[in-house]
Image 1 (cartoon, rainbow, N blue to C red):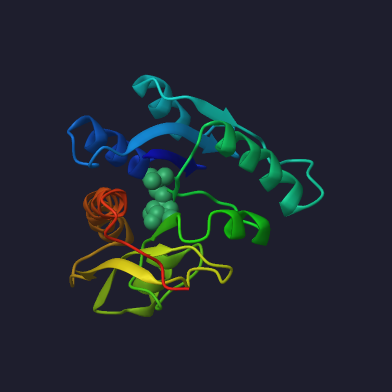
Image 2 (spheres, rainbow, N blue to C red):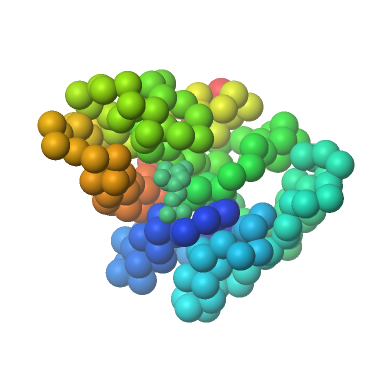
Length: 194
Ligand code: GRF
């Protein structure tokens, strides 16, 4: 199964997926394309190191979400991409994209959804003083951070946690959970209910 991973930043989740594939843990899933809207994302360096094709398309200067997404969709078609894995991709996908890949787009979110949606989930949970937060892998739908949940793991907030120590533990869980979710999808064990 041909997989595209979408990134905008550091790419530690991408790295976890690359490592999982190398270790035979993606059940034959192959990362054949990395898509980035940020030309300077460090994730691209990781992709380069792994010898994976990069599709770098800056999103500056586009008049609509759709216009950008059409260019990306064309590339995905060329590469016969069957699964789209969002890994810190800081763009909202348009309806046309989601329709085209309905049930074949995964996202990872650093909180126990439906709690703490949005771009600052770890900080928001920490500042709220919750005793437990977590990590969620879910299907992507038109509603932000709200698609059907695939895997979830709680992460307790310790008394002496700082935002940084909490972030570190959450990321460690992400790096374990995301490859597992991708493997389940590749094995045909996940189906999004419509
Ligand atoms: C992760 O915390 C992920 O949950 C969120 O964005 C972050 C990406 O981190 N969607 P990285 O680029 O994979 O290091």
